[in-house]
Image (tube, rainbow, N blue to C red):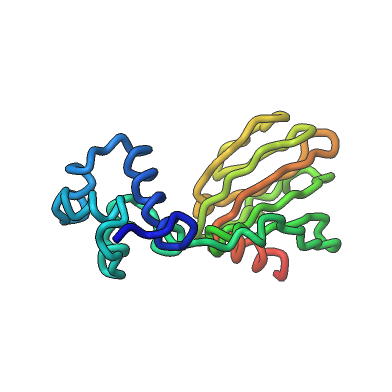
Length: 189
């Protein structure tokens, strides 16, 4: 029995095949990774075999994705409005597909601190791009100028601070959960 193309079952089957093809894998390669026979995988992709939850979990792992992403159908929340933090002059957007990840836009008007004791370290990773102006990133004992359209990525276990170089700058940063928590704790201190 072939499944209808418009239902969740058909969508999942198309995703499995599309992800396999995008990786450049044959049926045999994905079947080996998922510990299925190539004929079973072929029947799953073609709608001739019932999808079982344990197979979906195994296929999601083999395809380096999550089960949630494999079966996701909700596209109603495509637009995300920012959360405004007027006290710190920034906007934040949560990344729905990666819980705990946040995108933040911030206008900076002050240089980084002169005192090395003011640098903070915490668990996590950060990525940022300078949208306008020039930022100064202090990272451990090093000082980096980050110009407009340049990006920086670093582990936040290194003591760090960021500020401006001479005039206002605007940055867009991506923080994982630990980095965001570390920055929130710094602001409360």
